[in-house]
Image (cartoon, rainbow, N blue to C red; front, side, top):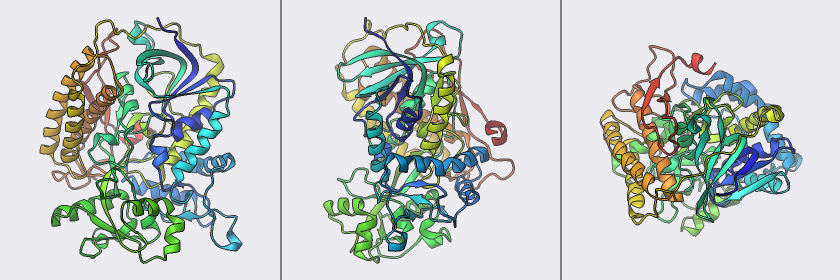
Length: 559
């Protein structure tokens, strides 16, 4: 029998949301932060652009709200948007005080002011950034601050397997009690008991063949919350970043939206511009419009990429504003100061997720969900550029305040059942995992990508249901590994994405279908909410794949 770990707060995920929460919690709280790989190997580290917030006197809270609502295609929750935008300046100031080295302006008379860039969907310059590697700067500062806190244990190479809920151990309460966690170094699953458990494990863009995300973005938190009985919302809205570098060795290298914000132009391979034919805002239209325009032109002409050109800007300007992108492109044989870059869209951000309120509460008592794992109502049908890190900071702060207020009145759960491996063996067919991983990501790209149809979704659903059965059989017979757990989570989230997309019979924001190309204006905009069927009591290792669909007016859902 292994010793059971016990903490006041168990945080699953080590990006901006998870580490901000850890730092914002009271110093008396005993906290564990688990990361399934190296501490920095998450989406925060790879975020290039910046953080949007109202930091300039020419800008306004109302303008930031209006831009966010417009990008969200009528599906944003106004209360969530206002809450997030109003908390933005304080959240950024907290990072400044933490020592994040944001870029300053060039002019001598303004050298003490921060440089603000503009990205798609924004009417004003309001994106504060650290050159073109803001995520690295933020994550580095957060990690350094967390390492100085004696009350926080950082556990790398630990992957959560499933949440432990009261009803799964025969109790009637609707509580989360902790999680089963795979220690990848010891190759064993251990019990983590906690007063509060927080999912901050990022999104699920790795469900697609081409993505800007690192390998860790496998929808773990969304899948675990679903299996534990939490509702999920709006998972049909998967954002495809318009401009990832097209190169076999680049894999997932993003060309930051700020390149377009500073004057970069999208061109066809023959040098002709095309964005003005799709939107009067051209290259600064919201991401869904730009990604669909690129996808349309590539399919219409049979191109395998388009071009992004900022070579008309001075070389010194490019090197100063985009040092990381410039250097990486040089390593791959492209000089963006002298030539256009070949780019393609790639899956980038999961706008839907686990349903939460403005404090991060989920449907399970003592389970909080923050960051990309959550669906707060901020993004609606399309996330506006640089609102993602903002959401991480704001909702982590709100959840920390709520947990802090409950810390002394909430009891630690009692001893919990150990992980049972008595009826499983080591796998002798790892090829099953590899094959299913590749098959899943390819049919999701082909059938559930930027442009969808009913037939494509039907094909995807048939395939995902077969994969689910095969993976569950495999999961039930062999000892768990990191790859198996990620695949199990990915196939679960893929099913939820497909079912959500089948439910929405209109085109809105990031969900575009040739069978319903118009936006439905006959009724108020609606969320797509999937509700798990009642889970079987006492079967913690069985996943529930059945769902029912709940559709209500957005005001009723999010008010």
